[in-house]
Length: 86
Image (tube, rainbow, N blue to C red; front, side, top):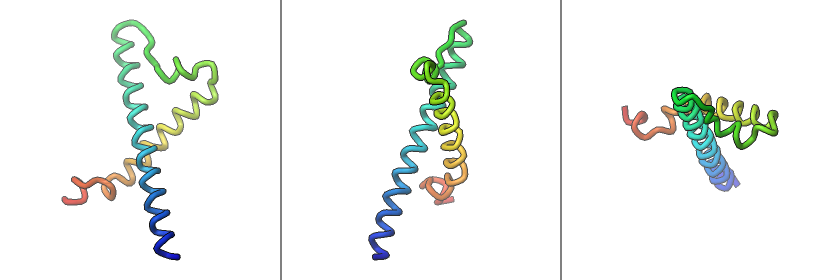
């Protein structure tokens, strides 16, 4: 029973890591596009373009991106192969 729990927990943690990583990438790309759009005099906020008609869902995406970043920062040394060697 314990072995099955460890596999399930490991699978869950891997899935959580993938989701938080993807959300952080989405947030980083969106901020990069907002910055580029600012230099070019336009608004390239992709999250707003896609979810602008649902402001609550748009805000939820921003909160999830922020929570993902905090999760990745706090767990980075444990998960990163390069950092765990040092």
